[in-house]
Length: 225
Ligand code: 5RP
Image (tube, rainbow, N blue to C red):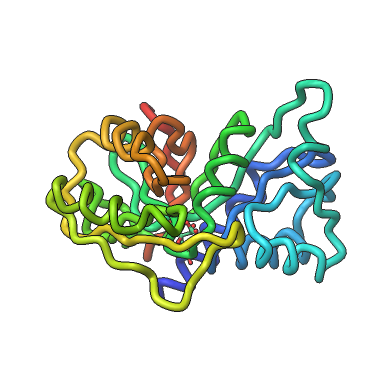
């Protein structure tokens, strides 16, 4: 089975995780694109989606699925029941590297508003230790030289993502060469650097459920389970 077939299988399995009639958080990326397609073609009807990117919003709207702002969704202290998104890497504790598609900031915000994070991946994304995939950091432009220096002090080489700005209008630095043994501590540390908008480590709020597409079907695993 190809990696894309495995992504599609995981995305399809995520339909069973969502609550019919509810608002749903929707992430970004090729796996989520499969999820949006499946939702439109055979998913339960939902009240609407809170999207983490302009690209996902456009895809949802293309199918006639209502896109609701997060502010609207949270009126009266409500929370989203479920957020469905992919990942670039996920470790055994369900901490993730995300942001390969550049949507990390809105992804982290929408994920924080959800009771459950359902991660959909192919099996190449499961790793014993995070860091082989370059860690994305969304940065205010004027802070790029400083963040590059601080990354070097961590032992990482920061590379600007050429020709790319996020939906929020900022550049991304990709941090290469890290071996992330303590993702919660590193997320907290980088988040404190002045000029950092968001680091693509999702450890303080990791995944709750992981649906992994493999050659032998979709494996469902639960954090701590
Ligand atoms: C986008 C993300 C994606 O979830 C991540 O890059 C995985 O993408 P794909 O499903 O295309 O492999 O974090 O910012």
